[in-house]
Length: 227
Ligand SMILES: [Zn+2]
Ligand SMILES: [Zn+2]
Image (cartoon, rainbow, N blue to C red):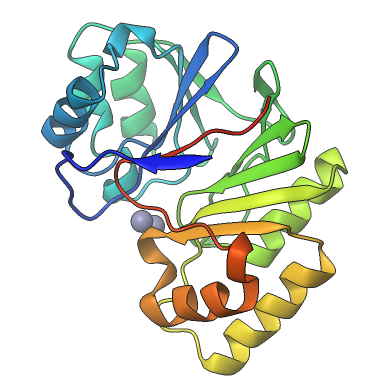
């Protein structure tokens, strides 16, 4: 089931709130802390409810909202790829607990991390285990969307129910997108919800390929999945 909340402010960036059995996790923070806090207020999300923050990669449009969130006085555990810059990690450590993630590290019940992948822009993805299979949540997929989904399969081995987030295919050729679609079918990805840096052309090709299994997403989008 999905529904959208229209009254949110938007800008370039990515952030997703994950709630599961009384646990609340924020995956990325968007680029603008004031927009993050305003949208959380509009959605009735008290910052104190967020127990964990997982940051996918160091780009400002994913980590920029963190400082404003921590400045509200809340102290969630912040999970980052170990290769994050030391000055960023030290800033977080001054305010709360920072955890440098290892591959397959559990964050909360039913949620684990891929660990960091890639060298030029190292990135981690979040895996949610559900009755229907894994939900793999991406920030920008800089190391490659197929590699990150493959890593989730190697780590957990469940069927892939949904891949969601930024697929980073803004400048990809039709041939490349077609081969990624083939890889998605090979990996058994059942549903897709590409957004953010995926690019309009790639989003169109995913929509066409996946039909009813393509999920339109964006700011304010809410998806409810059986635990
Ligand atoms: Zn990025
Ligand atoms: Zn991004």
